[in-house]
Image 1: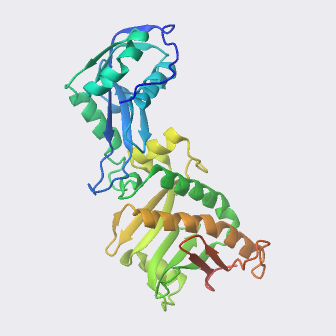
Image 2: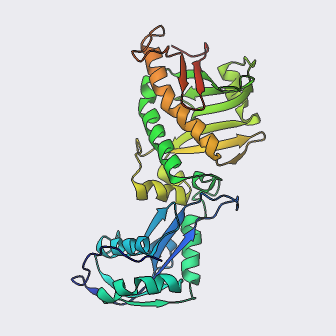
Length: 331
């Protein structure tokens, strides 16, 4: 294991006598144990904090897509020492590692910073904090997209960014709109998109037969009896904890305090789960396409864009995604 890293001199910072940190890396769990794209969390807690609340024990953490090297752990430790979120910069007296390999790889760094390092198997407190902050949804009902099979931080960042632009453009869009979304080679099955500023779900994609001609109102009233993908927006406290922390830690763009996007897959009978990787990509691509399409249509339903396509019929990406503005859209 490689522990090389250009370290900052930490010896000019005070030592908090008696403070013990525990550092370990663990993969965030998923309901699909076969998923290979789950992120890793490097979590640092203080075992000498008086508070019993899990959030108060957290010193720092980092979410990464690949197995954390000793360098990644040390970078996280350095940030926790130099720029802590709730305390003045200081060094702990002791850092404990669950992994002996991590401890030995980083021992030279700790010696140079005058911090004692040791390995320990007594990580019950660390395990409890990790479970509380990374694996339990904040409201107990919304599944985390970060834990879905095939999920990646890069794909989730693209979704969050597209959702922010979509949210910002909502006031300029028609009050309600209907779009048809098909993938090249799948003409018999399509998704009918419902976009409405007045509904909780600002964008809902309902899986329909290509010949389905139901109206906007009919689809909106019955979408919970169908397979659907949706995006709603709300305040940060609605989000599952690990999803919210990924947004905040990586500084992903959010349009407003009540503009945190939540992607949901709904099955018939209103049971919900997080979207799979391809479903999240579908939602993301539609979020990227429809703002320009609908803003142009509201300005002039007959206009053709300068980019050479009819804004009522956009073909995007590979595999090709065809998005068509339905006649049920309001002006």
